[in-house]
Image (cartoon, rainbow, N blue to C red; front, side, top):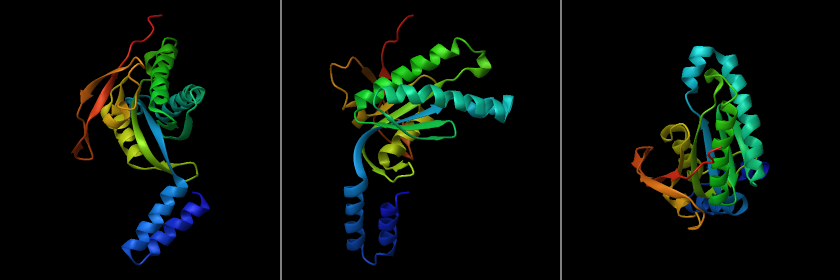
Length: 204
């Protein structure tokens, strides 16, 4: 965690009035806040695979996921913030770039799965949101946007699915060539508006 960020957090915790806390929070957002598209990718079905094949099998597939996904994300100007277990957390300057990366990730994993036995196939699910995030250093980031993308990618999306919050979907240019099917998933006990991305993949 950035030392300045840590200092401000301690000041916030020690502040004796709500007004003082609000002022410190305002400074935190001014110094460390940014608006980004957040993409969270989850490897589908890995609890079952780990139970069946063991932890070494799991770890080898996580490494393959990391080696495959990072160059795809970075090729579109994205930044991998962290890999955590079988998840990848990344951010982009626009939702369009995040969606393009998500589509390319699905295509990339479909391609490498052609050359592996089923036990080694990697299937992914992806959630995307757009809005304000706090970059804390480390690297790491926090915010409602990160939470929503995580829940969509990890808890709601199925293998091969790309889900966007409504606010993220609305950021897509009308002529980008993507469509969406509305859904209302339950996130942290609250129904939200989201979209299942509809797109065409190459046939060869």
